Image (cartoon, rainbow, N blue to C red; front, top):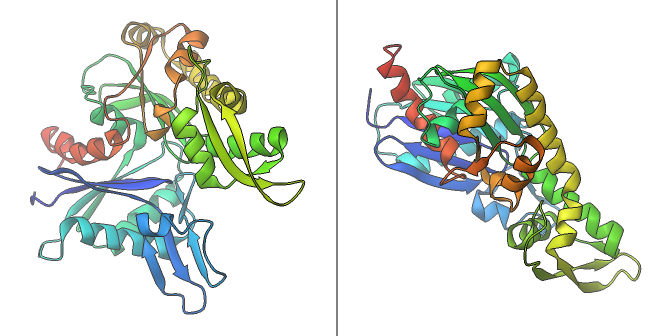
Amino acid sequence: MSAADIGIDLGTASILVYIRGKGVVLKEPSVVAFDRDTNKIQAIGEEARLMLGRTPGNIVAVRPLRQGVISDYTVTEKMMKYFIQKAVGRRSLRKPVISVCVPSGVTEVEKKAVEDATFQAGARDVKIIEEPIAAAIGAGIDIAKPCGNMIVDIGGGTTDIAVISLGGTVVSTSIKIAGDDFDEAIVRYMRKKHNLLIGERTAEDIKIKIGTCYPLPEPATIDVRGRNLVTGLPKTVTVSSDETEEALREPTLQIVDAVHSVLEKTPPELAADVSDRGIVLTGGGAMLRGLENLLEAHTGITAMTAEEPLTCVAIGTGKYVEFLSEKGQN
């Protein structure tokens, strides 16, 4: 095993690169901006994210991953190559072993696409790992023990829910409702309730600053700028956290339902473990206020968010290679 073993959290919203011994060295949005006329890539990552919704006609900012799955293969490959080089530097002579995580519901074909893209981006060997397992390792859960742990990993494009025991997934589901859908729900609500058209980035801002899915003890407000659909002119509206609760009710309840259905399929012994140990939330979407309370209210099981929800999956993906070598499979 060389020192440059890498774990990549290939997310819909952002890509994180973990290097063994160094931790998470890179976290950038998975956005690529390219020039339509010349087909050349203009910017990747944070630089490209700033261009979302603000580009002239010939430049398009795209997300090559949709709902946790590669939707644009060549762009994904170039993006991965760029991030790996940026993280490792060009001085490494040996190609690294790279582990990449994918949502638990992906098909073999989708897995193969990720594998191929990683080899093309310069890997010596590729290990594919399921997201909930990576999230559990990253959250500091000892997954090798014979007891049930429930992980709810809410990313940008998918939410992965799994009960894990003895290093493997016992019951799992992956739904295509996650952080991006929270943003879209806010966009829809603003249009319906306030006749205001806002962009994805503004919606994300609202979500981060005052978004909640459970009534807050002290409601907060924020001023939102957008375009009035009636007059077509820019307009500012004050939005309260209670309104975001109303806006986010549908997508968050879908996540609660999915958790419920996984619990229904869980063997009784493991279900008892889960109710003792609680539900662990990871991923960027887990940072939404009130999710813990909402899950608790609907399932009666305590929920807690991992310490570093954003980096759990990346750390777990990197550590998975070590976990395998300890099991003597490497």
